[in-house]
Length: 469
Picture 1 (cartoon, rainbow, N blue to C red):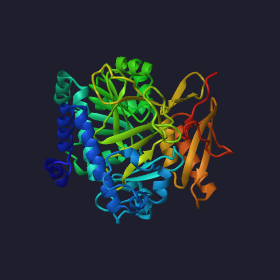
Picture 2 (cartoon, rainbow, N blue to C red):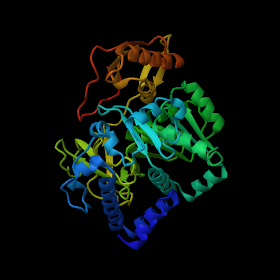
Picture 3 (tube, one colour):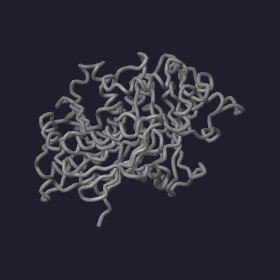
Picture 4 (cartoon, one colour):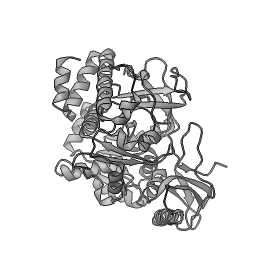
């Protein structure tokens, strides 16, 4: 590694440095980006070996200098959670202390141990996760988003954004330590002047209330889960929503190609997608051709079969292995995510040389129910239900299944040691409360006799809509 790179690493990583480094690497071409990737992987593995008892033991017997990720063993959420205190590289971080921290909603966005952002994930792969994110992770995420945004917007659109104040509205799951709301809450606490133009809206609110607040705020950039954007596009088409955004950003769920076109026409703005997860940050972003391009300088993504062998482009993978090259406090190295992806064979027509992919199996469908008089339909975003149940204490894993036009069942797996009846009472209260707020008090909610069921590919679909007739 050159002296310049070591110096930059030693003095810390800022969002501005990330932006500038990515800009320089991309100007030099794909080989410069791959070189960044190899260097950062070697640094991460060396750091994990030195500071993490778990990785030191896992990598025993391997060569000292690792620049090829396939030389390393595979990990997953279950392993990392089971050995949490050995995985983390800061002794001040313990699972017991984190569990106490995330049990308090008032601490969302607060720095754990005075240093770290904490985010939780639902158990879609069979295990609920708690993740600790350092400032390096946050700087890389911020720097990459700044760079992506400049690539998505034309000069005129950038001028519009600046002239009209740069207001950004995000419609996300709230009420828990979820990444989007934890990040936004911390930013607004620590940089209130810079983020006064940021508005966080909850997907748990009735759609008419969301529409009214969005109309009043008039954001220039709108970010939301794909299922929520589909609902808002329908409101825009019906004339109840009156937005004039410069950019619409879809996250967390897959967006079908036909819906992508509909959203762009409804909002009169480009719609871009970001693929990633709490563990990785931004792993890929979409181009005008509808493909997701990997952020190779900070993320390694390996499409593999069921035996963790690489699959060729043009073949849908069984799962993917993810390596986050930024976060040091809780290293994520060759970590099985569970998504099924298709790598594009050959170059993308957009001109971006980075590998292009499409995600198979992260798309969630909006649940719809008849209103109480049976003449209209009310839609419920999947992540609204997911976040309500996920925030209930004692839930290890869950699955919501629409069993009838006005019927839901919840498949529930309580955490070890939790009182099953108390957990179900909390879940039932949260779900019925959400449905009541949305005008769906007539929807019956019951506990399913069976636990959550795994689908093809090893993941648990957390929300399963009623099959089409």
